[in-house]
Length: 465
Image 1: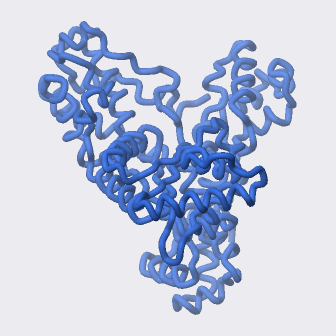
Image 2: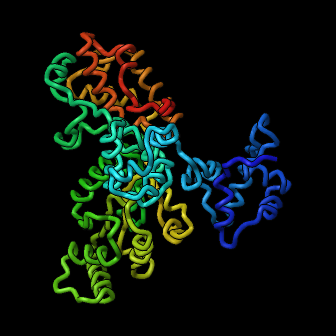
Image 3: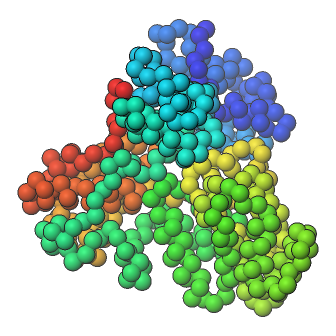
């Protein structure tokens, strides 16, 4: 038997359970042999010509039911650890390729970047670590100064270790629509910018957005604990802005927002300070315990006055683990069965992954996670809405075949990167680039040929370094 460098995430969940779950116990629960599960969990194969042993779907369902009965998270358990934990994987970057072929050395790059060769080695191999933007930027600049493509050097380190690409057009940003382009397509304004200038009437709400709005309002009204997560450009901020406007109009809600810029450095004391400030507590005491007591009394006063208090934290994926745990204690402040405070976290996908960790289990069991889903089958409806609000028509901007091709391109990105891309921000960038290209090419509208020339990814994932 030959073992792959991969394991199902399920195996680590079994170890992290309290108490840990043995494979023999799991085998008895689902009515399968130990060898069957062992081979499936470890992705074993008999030889290189045989496919990796997989667990049958009915057995997977039985395993999920058993894990639920033991309060073990089933999120992502069928993913392979090599794909989700890059501490154990080797990601072959362009920088690594140049070193392997003798064109560069880690010492050369480290000297130019004024950092250790070990750091450059870790970046080249895609090892996850505490590498801040400044260090990554320094390595990029150093590689560029040595005559290589610095932006390409660390792909896919930033793409995979970070878990997502902030903007797939980061290397070649989409241009804003010029007056010439707007006239060409008979639009009185850019359909993809300033959608809040008209009181939010230009915002397109997909089914996923409406569901997220509903859950946010329920959390605010009932003192809930909710995390709104999504990829960059999925519409999290837009959803929250609409909910915020609605809550403010009712006059029954007090929204507390911490203003500390460095979210990673935010601690429980900063959250208490936010409550004291936004609830207008005068002359608060100096000790943390006394300040927490003063915040609790202020929450009681607001509740007695018939007002709801919501603590809203954006960029919550950056919060320290201890801060996440302190949110659980703050959330439990109450009077009998009545919650005095609702907590809403807004963050990117790493926040959802953190809730799977065993060290924040007491938080994840109390917090409902709502993930903003992509446009999917509503992509065409989204584009029609956007162009109609700008005085145009979709069929006057692109052909049906071009729209279908864009959908196929976004679907191909999803298969390649194992994450969706059909979110408003990405779709906006794709269409704007296509509109600019169409005008430059002298085309009346966007054709499939024009759409095929849109650089969907700056550096193709299968491109040889």
